[in-house]
Image (tube, rainbow, N blue to C red; front, side, top):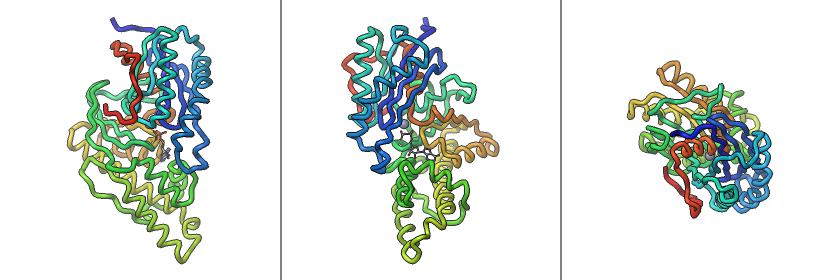
Amino acid sequence: MTPKNTYILGIESSCDDTAAAVIHNGVVLSNVVATQEIHKQYGGVVPELASRAHQQNIVPVVQLALRKANIDKKQLNAIAFTRGPGLMGSLLVGTSFSKSLAMGLEIPLIDVNHMQAHILAHFIKAEEQSTPNFPFLALTISGGHTQIVKVTSFFEMEVIGQTLDDAVGEAFDKSAKLLGLPYPGGPLIDKYAQLGNPKAFKFPKPKVKPLDFSFSGLKTAVLYFVERNTKDNPTFIKENLNDICASLQFTIVDYLMDKLKNAVKETGINEVAIGGGVSANSGIRNALLVAEKNLGWKVHIPKLEYCTDNAAMIAIVGELKYQQQLFAKNDVVAKARMKF
Ligand code: KG4
Ligand code: ZN
C-alpha cells in the first residue's frame, strides 16, 4: 500500500546554498534557502568557505523550514538529503546532519541525487507549473551542469547529451566577469541583454557531437573580443554593454535550442522540461515558448524558486522514494561525482 499523508524534510547543501523544505503529499509547505553572500567578493564559490557557512546555516535553516511548515519535527516521516554530485565539503555537512537527525528521530533516511532532483522538481504540485508526461526530455542548465536527459519514469533517466567542459551557467558567469560584472553575472547579462541588439556582435558556436555542448571556446572568444576592442577604446564595454550581453545571450540560447532540436529529432520525444538556475534566463524561456508555438512542442518551465538550487526538489524526490520504500542505509556516504 502506498503511504499517504507524509511529511518529508528535504535538505540541500551541494554547493553554496543551504536549504531545507517540508513537503506534504506533493505540496510544498516551506522552502527556505540561505544563499551564501560571502563568495561574491571572490568572484566564485570558495569550497572551504561554503562548507563552513553550511555548518553555520544548517540548524537555523531547518528550524525555519519546520516553523514555516507549521509542524513539529516529530511529525516528520523521513529525512531526504542531497548525497551528490557537488562539493565534497558542502555535501558532508548536509549528509552528516541528515543522518544524525534521522537517527535521533528514528525515521528513515533517503539519499537524493541532486541532478535527478532538478528534473523531478517538475512533479511538485503547484498551480504555476505543469507536470510532464513520460517519456520527456529534460534540459538541466545551471552553474554546475548542462545536460539533456531522457526521462522514462521517475527513476529511469539517461543522459543523452552533456557539456564536455564548462557548464552553461559558468559560461554566463565567466563572460560576465570578463565584462567587469560582479558574480554571479548570469542574471546581469540577462538584464542588460533585454535592452540590447542580439545581432550587434557575432560569437562562435563550438562544433561538437549533435547532443553535446562545449562552452570553453566561448569564454576564450569573449576574452579576445574584449582585448581587441578595448585596446583603442578603453570605454568600449561600457558603451556597448547592452549589445554585447544581448549578442552573447542570443548565441548561448541559440546553441542550447540547436541541441534540444537535435534531441527531439533523435528521440522523437517533443515534450521538454527545463531545470537548473539558468532556466531563469528570459532568452531560453522565450525560445522555448516560441518552439511550443511553432514546432508543436509541449514545454514545462518550473517555478523560479524550484529552478535554482533548493530543498523542495530534494523533498519531492524524498516523497517519491518514500512511496517505494527506497531508503538509504545509515552508512551512506556523500559523493562528489555521481551518475543517475
Ligand atoms: O542551479 P543554480 O542556482 O546553482 C547551481 O549552479 O547548481 O544555478 C546558478 C547559475 C549561475 O551560473 C547563474 O549565473 C545562473 O544560474 N543564472 C542565470 C540566470 N539566473 C541564474 N544565467 C542566465 N540568466 C539568468 N537569468
Ligand atoms: Zn543545481
